[in-house]
Length: 410
Image (tube, rainbow, N blue to C red; front, side, top):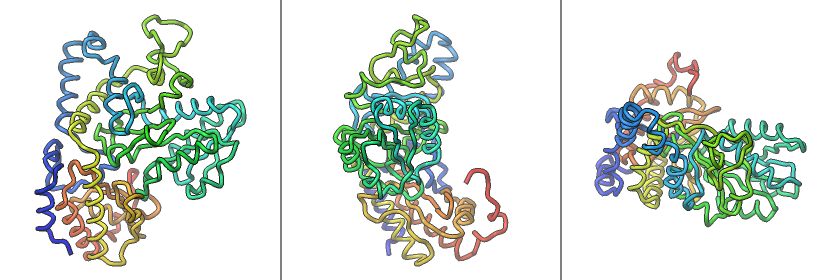
């Protein structure tokens, strides 16, 4: 069994270890919930303070031009592009993930006017399912949503399918789908592919270019660490940029916003997907988060991610054999950067772990979810987290009465 000393040695030779100092983390806590909300970085703190005190506080309205606020959606989109394998002018930062999925679904449906089906995963994140139904209801040609078991995708691909929308890494189990293979099969059926990268961006290497992805959207508040409610981003393949239409148009997606025209004329490329004024403070936090990511090699992130999750799974199975079912694939090619453990008393376990300084989260019906963000999670954190998990189970702390009542946020 791996010892704590061995974990400390791994940390000493880890090429990403110095990045932990970039984050404002309490060393008394073991934070394994970056797959839900990433921690605050020092660079985000600096960027937000500058936006507050200097750009807004001193520059006032002049900062829309002088501080480049108006250009942030495209400028930060270009910086995000590296994390998903996209090129310049292919990504825009705006809104939040759900709104961007709506825009991209609308665009995809218009590109396939002779088709009337959106295929998605019945285990998808609920907001994705809601927005797909909402967009289908807004069409005039009777579009319907078919929610399937994702393993049966090939059985549902036919000439009625306009677009397939899947989440690349499952939010419950952490299972990672085959980006290139699925996209190719969808294209063979004549449909378009829309990927949700909520649990992928900053967690696993992505290459939308080589996979020939049509559309993708993601959030920035998880592994990217851009803060609660952080902005979303959208990718549109160059081949579609002159053909799409933003179904939720707004003035900043207009080719000439300050002409104040009564008729919408879309800006070229992905800029037309911007609807309303940028949320400047949120974008400042994202800019600070990207200051950290600019220093990171995604291949190193992936190497450490797999090592951390392997260690966690091995230690759990060694220290509490048979206590949990590991819902996350053991196959590296199918694993994201989290581990999901099934337990009938999972909610109480997560609450009890929080009391002893290990922060994870719970997802219905029985999943204890732990995220392993390589920029700040250490190998010794993994060891200590499992030690505290063992202690919780041995004391029966998870069975306390107060842990049987669910909080609004789990």
